[in-house]
Image (cartoon, rainbow, N blue to C red):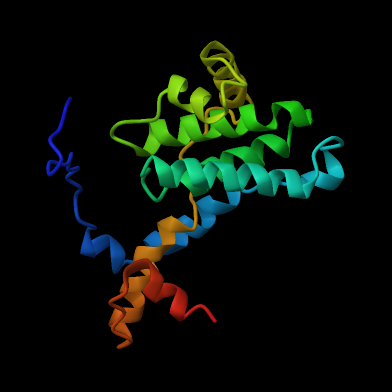
Length: 186
């Protein structure tokens, strides 16, 4: 759809349910579920022989830059990183496939969290066409299989509204959204 300069696509979101934000059981459930979606070992020592921590950092930076440039939802980046870490914790991966894996993880996270997800073609362009859309789609199935199709991982972003609400109830009056929560994390 072609938009004029002043027009924007607006995405309407439901506001958080205050009943859920005030219920401690929800936060406890998030903590319990989060443990199921964490990598089980230090995969750089146990699983990965070819990939080093600095390589993961480079892919993470690339994923973040793509997410920012594409104005992805805030949840896409941490979810993509969760998928990347969980995959690397179980599958020895060659370093030549690391950006492909990062693109696949971003593709999956985008499909789960975006109303208009990133396309395979667009992600291939961000890799300077070092991967093909068909390759990305093939790896998508591999990643889904290794993650056992468990994609609804709990990420740090899922806790922010709960912490923000708790701080407000305790009289801290956090008004700075996400950034207000970080003020109290020291």
